[in-house]
Amino acid sequence: MEKLDEKVYCSSCKQKTNHQILYTHSQSSEVNDDFHWHEKHHIAQCLGCDVICFVRQYGSEDMWDINSGEQVWVDDFTVYPEEPQKVSIKEKLEEKMFHRKAKHFKNAPESIQNLYNQIIESFSKGHDILCAAGLRTLIEGICTHLGIKKGYLYDENGIQIPDEEGIIRKHESLGGKIFELYDKKFIILHQALILQKVIKFGNDALHKMKTPSYYTLTEAVDIVEKVLYDIFELKNHSLLKKS
Figure (cartoon, rainbow, N blue to C red):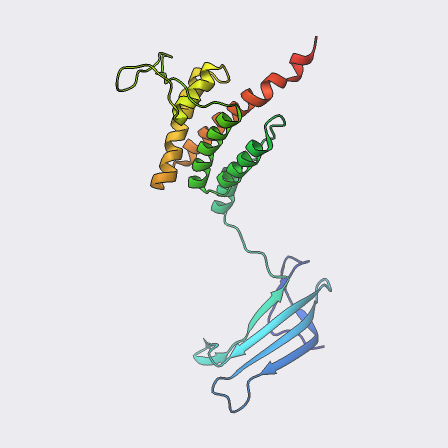
């Protein structure tokens, strides 16, 4: 049997090997056409392992190379199944660095869990702006689910902050709602203070298209996961049910 003019990739041998042609369908341009080309579709068999593949062989008057100073016509061979693309070490390291597995919060509402899953997917794909904006939205979703509508503002020492008029009162902003989570003992003060930072770069992502760093996002996801666990899972911990 006739052999392919060029070695092609074998999906079983995992390398380029010689193949014999089992069947060929050919087509080409006409003699009087302005542009000349030919195309062959082969069913071929690896001479190393006998696995069958499909090969497209194409050539035209534009496809040539120089060999020993002479112009040589060359064909292009495309094999199916195709040869897998090689992934560089850098790409492997980046994929490993960004990949993060979503946690399951079995006592969280479905809408909260779904949004969290999308945030982790965005993080793993390096979609930093979407991830940052999603974290802000998730925090607001938690407040909405818990019926939090407004709250006092606090400084880093846990002292209530007056507004511009010098009056201490509750605010309907997301910042106020976060501190209401603290007031109602859903989270501790330092969690509330960190969440204020999260909503700031979330706002920057939404309104200024500003991208937070990978490490900032990592820390933000860490703290939001801790908040989700404390709010929805901790009160249902198995040890609390034991006498």
